[in-house]
Image 1 (cartoon, rainbow over the protein chains, first blue to last red):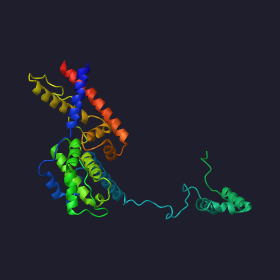
Image 2: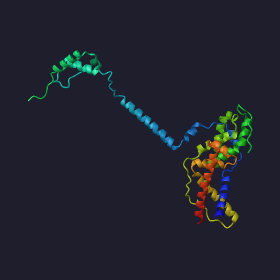
Image 3: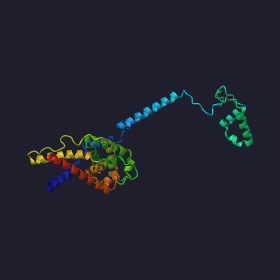
Image 4: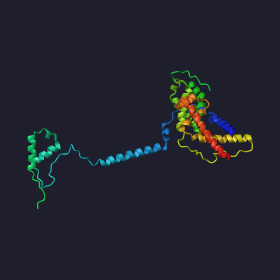
Length: 143
Length: 183
């Protein structure tokens, strides 16, 4: 109905116009002025953090404590360092006897493979031949 | 309300200048906080915090073009930060629809208006923030669309559009509830 619609519009206008039509309570301005120089306490504001913020802080603290605990727990086990480790070349089995040439070749490959490139082809071939021929490793089960 | 000319440019306002500014703008600040918080006690606390913040930066008061707008912006921010994030009043509370009218026409009108205000309050709280904020500020009679735009950081035209949309939305909702209650 147009009349009802108009009435609702008028009532809505009236209600919205009065929505914030309020006056400060008597004595409020004096109170505000008296306390205006007081800074809002940061501690009090901090306590007003919403629940998710508190949960996040608690989670972060828990994580930090766990990581610290894990770190100190692992601190007893020293991790081997490749740089500090001395290389000892041993045969894979006591039956295998490595010749000095084989040891030289293995050491060279492990420590400074680039040196192979600087060797002359003749020296390299000699070294490979010696290392290959003089092997005393068992060739396999004998029947 | 006429704006108070604060003539102490570039310096911290003296006690009298500060006090007169507070006296003149107190009502505006209170209404802004009340519009956002809908509670006299909370609005009082919010104005107190607003003035504490303003006092801290009072040296700016002498330099700002419009002290009322500057204070209003602080008040709005404080009130917004104090506004509970989760709405505690559901829309479907019993009594959301108006009760049948009594026999006296004047009493009818008053009761009906009171119920409409309650309904309006609930529905405004459930509006999207984008529409609710300009609408709430538009209910403060001292604020023009331009000033609301400056407080919210949006153009004046957007303030008008959002207020119209909010009003239309409210009207539709109220009409539906009133129609339902009239059956």
